[in-house]
Length: 205
Image (tube, rainbow, N blue to C red; front, side):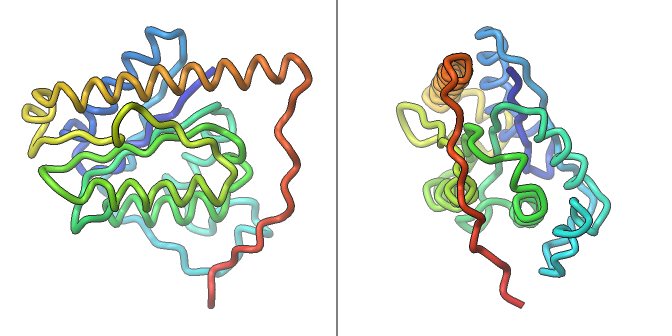
């Protein structure tokens, strides 16, 4: 079983990365394979609603979005992490997820996912809600912890000092590993995910 951890920050080794590292280490201790995917600092196009993906089978823009979706097809679970900006996730992450979920929804259906937010002080709950919307529209079980999936710190060093936040990250990982095992056990018993009707969502032109 494999979980992809998406780092939606512009800083590859910042506060957001420190939270992902806690999750990654705990997942590995539970025997779960992991891969961290950094979306990078290059400009990320937003979705333009061209709907070319329906005929191409991928987004018309060739960048890290298509690379990620292909990796997602082989993954069993996901963690999407972002710093908090104006009480919302990073704009680059939202552009990335809009295109990934619109062009490659089949790569995500019925796979567990967790949203993780890093902030100096406020905006985490609103940002958490935004990312969870992607899971809700794609039939993805949402992985929670024992508090909101968030950590605090203005930088990596401060984030590491947030022991409660890092304990929350560990609990996310434990719950993710447990849920993945439950799904795997169900499949072995012939219990498969339901066939959902086609999504009615379309981006308005």
